[in-house]
Image 1 (cartoon, rainbow, N blue to C red):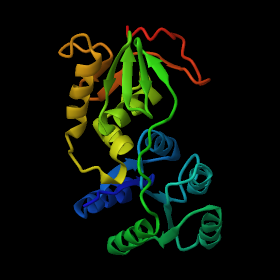
Image 2: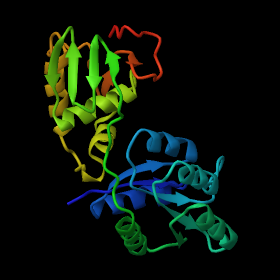
Image 3: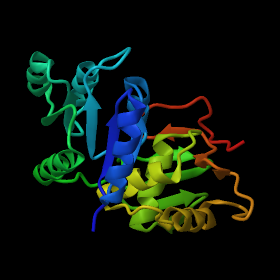
Image 4: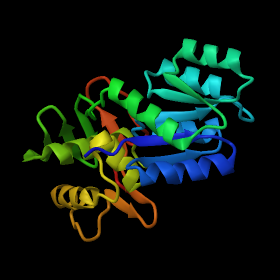
Length: 248
């Protein structure tokens, strides 16, 4: 059983929060955002399967955010519109929205439309960026699923390889367990899955001098995990301020 991750974007709390609760009860993982700025953060730091998006919001409106989503290739969008927003519904569909629901709406209808859109849009499996990268004295080869340091090479499982790739993509950024699940498992992730903790523990045993006191993959209590090292691309990619990869 898969658990699609739905992002609900609506400035009205009395719509946003009850809808989130309803979708959770029907087998979805849910993130909530009160505006487009917060929604961008969620999309950029997780693997969202579908966005339920209000058109009329203060600041950046839903149509502008929908255009931004379409420009980066998804995820699919269902618009929440008012009866008087007929022209906006048409514009939304033209710029990339997949469906719309008129307010006030029946949550069962919206759930049915969500399921229909997800059936049409196959899940995109998480991928690992290609190219060699150096961090904390290690060189990661994602294609060969290996780590090398001082001539010693160790193999990584596919899960460890994906997890490390995600951390290397976002050095020094705190990633929650939910975000790591999204980015490594996508729609196959299950709520409250502790596999991330197990993978972090296994990965630490392969890269930390003392896995019980990690200095490279550090725990942010109440937050998640953070790669405490700079990352250098070895195939012509970008380089951070500390190419030596000092984890301090």
